[in-house]
Length: 208
Image (cartoon, rainbow, N blue to C red; front, side, top):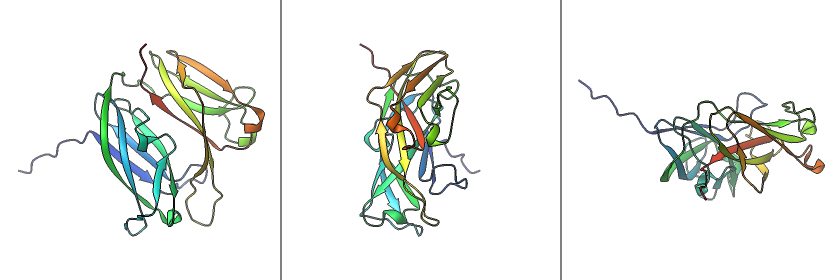
């Protein structure tokens, strides 16, 4: 009888190019199958369509996954948007993920995902950067969460090549959102039209 393979604590998926033109390309998702929240640090290796390593390409994540910044909640997922720099960066079609370190943190599992969206002046969720006046954050969980938010602009689309982030602005301060509550952050007018995506990640709560 074949022995059943033990379940892995984490699973990883990578999408070089989205099937939907409205969705971002070069997206890495890590899912935590354990009951413990963690802060992972990873090393990312870029590969081409043939699986060959691109040694001169550096890989960074908008949310800082390569620096051990975002928290991966218990039984939850973390979405990272990847940027590639250096000779051969346009040829990246695969990413090899090496887990360097995993730090356990005291944080309950999410009962529902925290939602962060672009909003207009009427506080409605929007997709058009020209209507982007602020950020809406919704926390449907029965406990406070700390959220770090970044605004992302992507490069122009060239043929079938995947797009990637070219400009990222991270809010200077993390946002604490109370249980079952919402927060609105209004942005300067010169931001309107510059960014196409709002991304976020959770941070461990700092006890003082």
